[in-house]
Image 1 (spheres, helix red, strand yellow):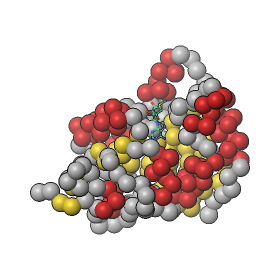
Image 2 (tube, protein in one colour):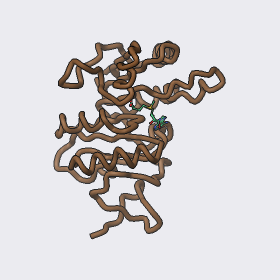
Image 3 (cartoon, helix red, strand yellow):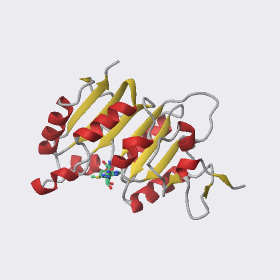
Length: 220
Ligand SMILES: C[S@@+](CC[C@H](N)C(=O)[O-])C[C@H]1O[C@@H](n2cnc3c(N)ncnc32)[C@H](O)[C@@H]1O
């Protein structure tokens, strides 16, 4: 049975979507969504984690399998990767995970509700190494302020990159946004082999690259 979509997550020409859909696309980011808009109704409040730039979805799937008590939203603006990850989520039968095909920058501006997220994961964000492209980097002051807005007090922003220059930029950006305290990077996987186990991390391990990581806690 098809039902009307929540008004902020209308999909397709007929404005309808299946409540069980994994891939959310063609969404309006002009106004705030509720948790229910994204994940559907649940009997009790559940924590939410968001991964930005999921790529092929390896971390998202591993985390979502590990924590069935948490809802996961993966955001990816490359359509092929969003579809690929959504397909993996479907095949794994994960009911706690949605994939949003959208630009995270726009999604975080208004659509994600205030203080609704426990963790925001950003792993191996595109470094845009040329100076003239630096403004395309995701981790800019405005985005970090939006992350702060959506995090619950005590919630965390977690970042891993292999790119030293981008990491320095991230450090300077984080130092200029109030309301965060540095915290040790949590152990997220059951193995010690990887930090977060994304496809880029695995590729860069083979290349012998160093990794830089940051964990910021939203002050209460
Ligand atoms: C270098 S890849 C890393 C993918 C994955 N996190 C990993 O470590 O294997 C960066 C990913 O972030 C996505 N991305 C970059 N900016 C984004 C944005 N503003 N919103 C959503 N996705 C974004 C890109 O399409 C790409 O898939």
